Length: 133
Image (tube, rainbow, N blue to C red; front, side, top):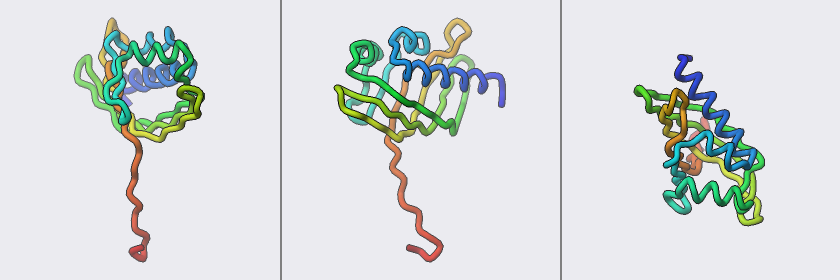
């Protein structure tokens, strides 16, 4: 693993831990001012709206794990793709997700900050067994 990959993995870990803390200020430290969350349900959601929902208790996370599958960096811009699972609540109702997560990072003042997060639900086609079924 390269130094850049280690830095990106550390940024991902910090971002996940911040999300589970449900502390909007801590999350803000992991993202750029223009961070955007792109969801299958609503499309692009501004970082300000996500942080407001977390700060007000409308949205919260209990768990968040991610396994990185791909990292690419070009100077001060990088992409990290992983499979993530999380649990929590939205408007008082329990939520859980198994999704592909694509985070775009930008190096700001020497630190990697997330610029955009794209979520895609995991939908895996059933693989045929050895007998073709």
